Image (cartoon, rainbow, N blue to C red; front, side):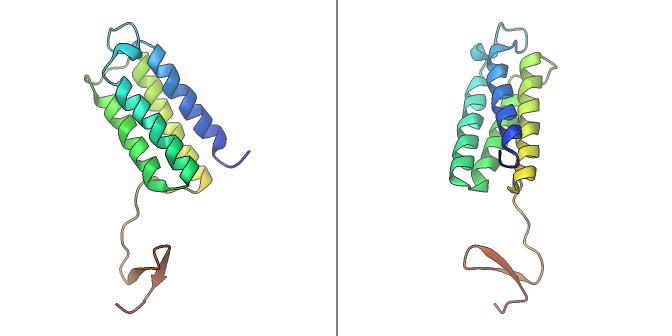
Length: 123
């Protein structure tokens, strides 16, 4: 098993479980408006892992954050499961070496050939 794969599986399981758990007094998350954000987060995460592109994983984390905020904040079990899924996604990305939050440009660096940071290259 590759580094982070267990965390990614845990994130997917928690996200799917959040659809079946109660959200904000409703019977299940499948009836809550956040279900679109949960499914989008799952789809974006799968695309990011399959393609190996970190920006898709960042988009998955943003979608999970939107799902947490839809309908207000409360401590319902569906929201807690989705928060756990987002946390597992972040830990899995760190374990696998993926960058979830885009890096800032550092002084004296320049993007060269689209793949590497090169320190001190001429402009």
